Image (cartoon, rainbow, N blue to C red; front, side, top):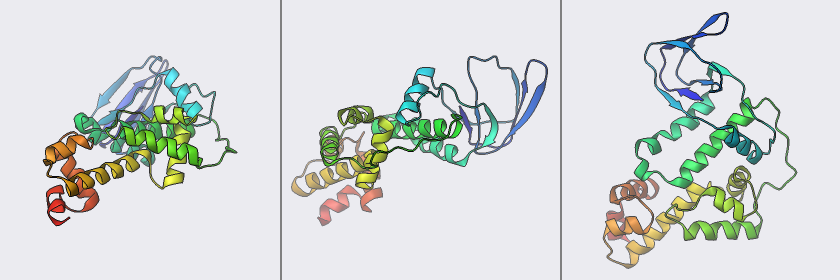
Length: 240
């Protein structure tokens, strides 16, 4: 699957007995099966975010989205999809700075993309679930406890969902319904809370605070802290 972040690209695709021409504008997408023969002339500049999804992964995504049995996606060429384009763009900072990328955030976004793909292009209407949209109190406590023990991001959403006996997709939706935040947003808030406690009660250097709270380095910590709190960690410490 490809998402075009730049307009002005054209490709002429050759089929067995004919050829078709397609103009890609910004936010247009394509979906194709890599097992099928493909030949095309590409013209004009292009900038795509590309995803490859194995058949096994597609089946797992469909199961998590409570749409079992989906084994393929509809073929699309130069179709405009603003939702999918925005989801793909959200991953670009993590691709540009993988050292600062949080595994929970990346998994959360890829789950959202996969769920959207099977719901939108899986060829079957969604089936309503009769389960509650929220976590039970026991599931919520268990999930938060596991996330708190791994604020550095070394636990995956799949791991947490499995402990709660839920699919990954359902867990993310239920966690947001229960807490008002995605798992990644909740973990980020807890990281900043832990950082505030350390800043308030010690003279630990900011670089060490950053590592202790799961950030890649002091620069990454400062950007996130300022974005959430509204001031830098150093200023906050002086005024605390």
